[in-house]
Image (cartoon, rainbow over all chains, first blue to last red):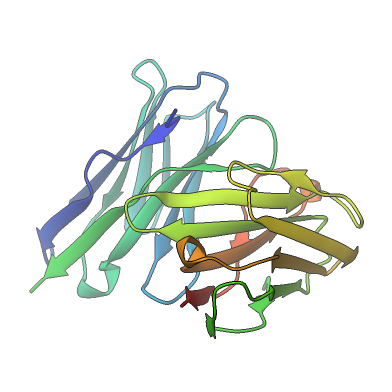
Length: 111
Length: 114
């Protein structure tokens, strides 16, 4: 039972454009959501997070949107840069330090 | 900055060997986790620990065990390595004192079992 789903395994975006990565979840008890970025042969690095009491959190070029009624969150990257090319994982927790991860979306930003 | 280190970046082992993967964090975090990452499957939790000497099974504990003798160190043990344990292994840590569930990851160990 996949509680956190990233239905797009890959995404290709032109440099300078917006990248939108999507994530859906099924567990209504999730109260904290995170996005991680992972380069090949490296560990994931924390990117941005959002609490369930908010619907938007912004950090520079990265914005996460949460739609609780739809059980959907998205990560917007504007403008996209070649260095953003990586695998992005969304993750969720339900009041504990244990995270449930999605399967990842590979983003490629081309010139 | 949180620093999580893993003893090896790459390992090659033979089927049936006992394999030890070590993880050390320097931020006095109580909670430590072991995941494996496989293409199309994301990160799957193997074991985690909320304190020294404590361990909890994650989603895929079969074929693995762990040891947490010191707060900063969390070891993953493959008792008898098999080819289906070829994977990227990731260690992470966090502290409940931070108030949020953000986990910090090590660089990973890519294990190949022949």
